[in-house]
Image (cartoon, rainbow, N blue to C red; front, side, top):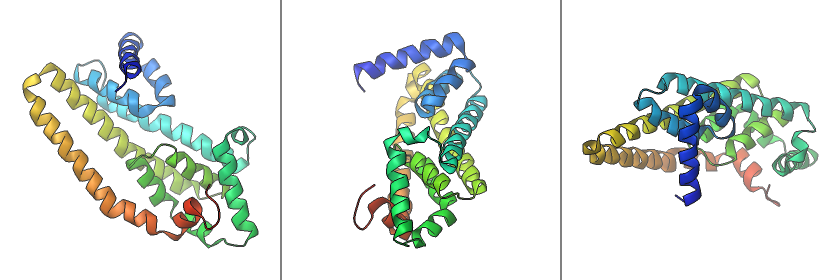
Amino acid sequence: MTGQEIILGKDIFEWLLTYGYPVFIFISIIDSTYVAFFAGVLSSWGVFNPFIIWAICVIVRLITDSAFFYFAKRGSSVLEKFSFFRRISKRIEENKEEKDVEWLSLFKEHIFKTLLMSKIIPIPGFPEAIITAGGILKADYKKVFYGIVVGQGIWAGLVVFLGYRFGDVILSAKHLLNVMGFISALLLVLFVLYYKYAHTYIKTRPWFREFFNGNNKNI
């Protein structure tokens, strides 16, 4: 952790302690994971209700992701300013022109599973890319909706829980080894499960190979 991150973390603690839920909502629009962890810590000290924090994380991400999906579906000029949107859109159009549309239908069909995986095992920018591509292809919003809610619900719950437990550690140092051992074991299990199942499954999907690797160009 860099000095800048430590200072930022201190500032976030002060903002959350001073302004409470309103500032948490505002910051979570930008980065719900980082601030949710700190809010989880404060929840263990009685400052916040962890279930309210979890609900805010899910609702805020649902709103922002749905907005991405809507703008992509409408072909909004707002997203045209972002290079990742132009690359995704160009890739899709190239495949349509080449009549290589099999992966397009597969992507739309399995968007719930893909979005769920991208939320649970977050890779920076991956969920946004999935949602944007889904909007461009006019995928079923119901599948997107459930993918966001379920995936974000699981991830936010995990982050808030870890923050909550970390807050307990700060107040009760005697539990440090047990908690750190639990966190390490949990992270190891998640990594093994992802690498053995989710990672392998995603990589073998035809639409993934076509969309993210391509035969001629990268996105």
